Length: 250
Image (tube, rainbow, N blue to C red):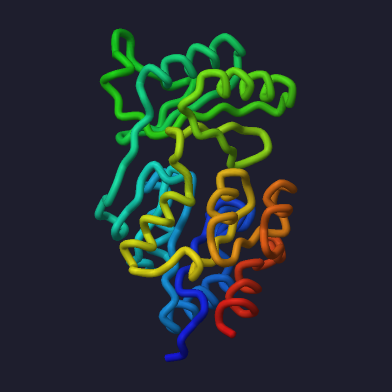
């Protein structure tokens, strides 16, 4: 087996691995398996919860570590948790109050389930009773989104990114996909310089900047394209195939 410059392929899911129909194309799947056959580790690196990411990992036959909820969880294998970092319940309370004040759609991942504006805490249930992983806001109103961002930044202690131009995603400060992939590297005994990370949104920015080859999809947000080492085809045009064929298996 040829010694490869890159040993780990870290893949964002929505807008990257998945096309707009939330499917992995046959061509992308074929080339991911070619990479795996050549000894390349393939790691899902997603803002999704583990329960939402797992079916796609199973579809690809992945048994490798996984980064979920933007780095709040790192999995040693698909069902073996390695590390989990929780949000401060007091911060979640403040973010919830802000969402109500601004009358905006919001959601939150806990260890147990997904909450949102329509399905929130039961009456009398305390914020401290829940293990919070991530909080999010969604609005197409750019001014409103910016106003929320300014207030979040004033709160401090928060890692703020997005997984689409219309949302804001909040994790504990210092927790992101780069810190997650760094821990995956330790588990696999490889260096961050041996990693290729592919993504499309601001929650991919830290890891794209931190690895040996940071790749933006053709459909990526402009800020991600500007920071990436390479821009490939879109998620609907098998951009991942281009990464594997032209930059990993060479």
